[in-house]
Image (cartoon, rainbow, N blue to C red):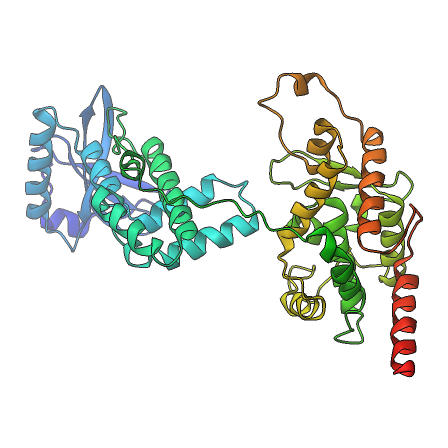
Length: 426
């Protein structure tokens, strides 16, 4: 039968299935679909590339029967000339995908990205690409990229580079994700390459700041004298956090997220599983560090999960900028948290710690070194180097003259007694 307005109006939805089709007897491939819910739509069904494919033209009401028939004729005419309208629609949709949509898809695909990386990426999208987010990815040109990199570089060269590295990653992702019907990438060239071709990337020297050896005593004493901000003993938590960074060289997030189930008091080790290079990192505890954890455990509530707990939604403490500021003011030593890692490395190298042991202590990858691939570094073999580094740091801090174990709480009491005596003499 021919699909007419009267027929479509009278057609009933199916009672025993999800949908039913009424095919036009005059125009082959033109049909009416009715769902169990009573929704009526016009469709085209035909052979495309040796497969029967179905395309929806629109709902009845938005399209009249004659309008739908005319649209079907146009579509079937295209198919007759070898054009695949489904692929055409898909390609048109992909070409309109925005930078924000690409970014969202990229984050879904890259499930292993760390929380800090996600925060940084979202910040870059808002800071550098706020006005580009609704723009189709394919509309972002080489000239636009070069101009934006140059403009933002006047504010921060490092952040301008970081933003463009993120944009480069998004284009690379899109190149593999979005293809035409022939399997060809819709992004044949990454436009961010313009920065490499023109040598426009900013040269940003790696930070080399450390706490100098002659500053360690002042820094250490200032850390020990940080006053409690509340009755919760927050300062002792942050004090131990700073000391752990200095005496292990751990990255700040690795340390702050440390949980008690990763501290092995019997084996005298700590285990970091979520590392930057995704390799589980097991570190031996020197005598000083073991005592630090024992004191920390004694001060912690039994049901606390994190070694350095906080009151926020994460459960662990956040970056302690206020306390850092107090330490800087009291000691006169300017430092950032990553400086503590660099200080650990610098001190270790000054002691001629074997390169392979040092790399293992820092959990650095050794994929470029053929010899390193044959070396299996047991954690016990790292215990002597770790103790050696600890002892030297304590000497530089003016805490001990020998390799004695230092009780942090006792050292803090001694500092307070010494300060009280000086005030009395004055």
